[in-house]
Image 1 (cartoon, rainbow, N blue to C red):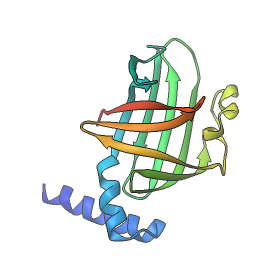
Image 2 (cartoon, rainbow, N blue to C red):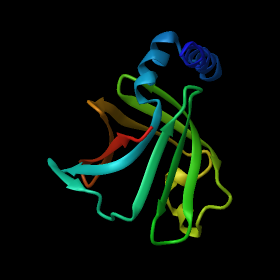
Image 3 (cartoon, rainbow, N blue to C red):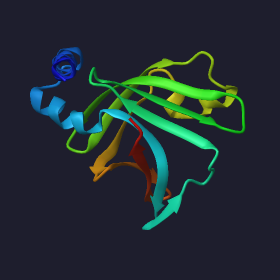
Image 4 (tube, rainbow, N blue to C red):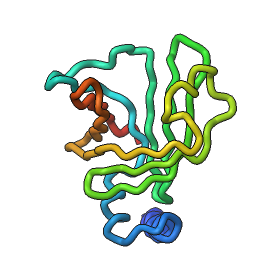
Length: 150
């Protein structure tokens, strides 16, 4: 238990130094640390199940200021995976893609989130046990609802 607490403290201190965030930002980011999986979505005020139940989409946030976005489909070969630097403050996440898996499926590069150097800012909010990631789509927010898996 003490070792785990020390690891969290060390990771927090490292993230403060590594990405230049202040202590308050590090404390805010702590609420999103962990591995989250696409659980459902909200569009036009309606909550819906995942459109393709074979899709496995995961976002993993680390204390060092990096995250990993990964997806695959259970019934198809291939993956899409990348890592980014991130800053999380006041329900906004700022990201810059720093690594793209060279083994990604061919079509992955069509998604800007899978392009090296891509920068974006999006609204990301902790709502109870879920994370809501807001992506503008046709004048409305498409909200990915992510559930912690570890």
